[in-house]
Amino acid sequence: MRKLTLFFTIILVVACSKNNSNVEQIAEENEWLVNEDNISGSFSMYPLGDHPEYTTVANTNLPDNERVGIMAFEDEIRVYPYPHTFATEIINDSYQSQKYAFTYCPLTKSAIAFQRTKTLRASGYLYKNNMVPWDEDTETLWSQMLIRGIKGERINQRLNTLAIIETRWKTVKEYFHEAKVLKTIVPSTTRIGGTLSNNTKNNLRNSNLPDDREFVYGVLDEDDNVSIFQYEDFSNQNRYDITLRQYNYIVYGNNTHNIISAFEVADFNRYQTLDESEFPYVLQDIDGVKYNVLGQGINGEILDKPKYAYVAAWWAFNDFFTNFTFQE
Image (cartoon, rainbow, N blue to C red; front, side, top):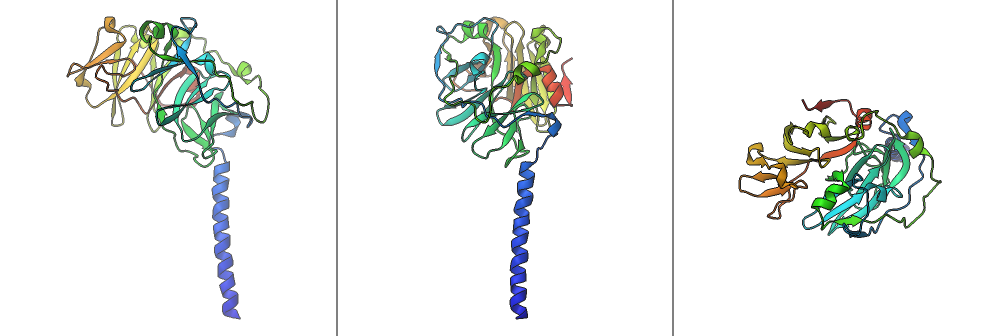
């Protein structure tokens, strides 16, 4: 009888231990990685943005100074005018077998593309006025600018990104005539769990800087150290060579064309900067191969980009990060 009682006691203890372990895991996943005081909004998912349609540059009418994001693939260039993304803020897209989500936050002015397995949607939450995507695969909530899970199964993990090059519509018209341009997204579903709020209107902030200086380009490392580049940094030179951890990056900028791009290279000395008259080609390697500002080579090769880099409003970078390096 004592042996039988001991046996059931052991079974009960083991079972409780397993249950406690699960509870602890759930508790961790249900906690916010970040300070909840900086979370606003509610879980009220934006309409689903999927099955995007494209048109030609010639058939698109936008103001010359409209900000757009460009994504370059092997044989295709896609342009995402930011106003065309406002209805959903996230567009689930794909190129061949590569699934990705183009995301744009109209508050922090940040455009970042994430690799995905299933659908991403704007959750309705904001963290420090920045969008918080939700992914269908793990139901994790992500901070767009931190590029990090802040609640859920993948808390404190990072998504992989694809490079977005930001410029103005005028540059696209003049140099990328064959690009495909995203049409205005018409949501396939309505917003879930609530109605549109006045968050966008109420949370817009002004850095009190002229428009061209309000936006900056940041290159991040794994520890959230950020190298900041302003467009005016490229008034007198077009290139900066930086090293973050073991990675070398050539950062090219052109103040006239409102564009900054970075390329990962093994050796800075293998590349020379081309004269501005050759734009959109900006670099040439020692073998004579020219690369445009999107990183596309005339031989079909594409230069690698930084793992984490994007344009956003300076006040947003200043809210999110503390360790900055500025160009002198």
